[in-house]
Length: 77
Picture 1 (cartoon, rainbow, N blue to C red):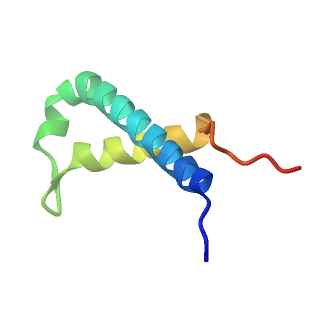
Picture 2 (spheres, rainbow, N blue to C red):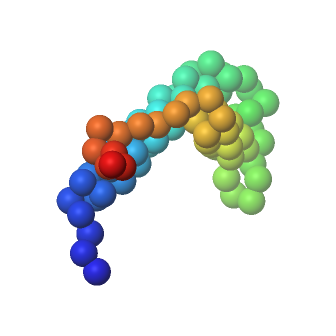
């Protein structure tokens, strides 16, 4: 089974873009909503509730509103 170099670069590009967007959106939420005292003290199964809350919202925003592309995507001919 041979994997094309462009396929690997395509996957790495999409994952890198997703992680960058996730980090930016998460940090933005942490700087704004993270300042609320109620979110800093709530803990769910050993994890701060804001970690779970911000992660779910970040993934939702990326999947719902952002289309991630890659310059390595193979065009069909």
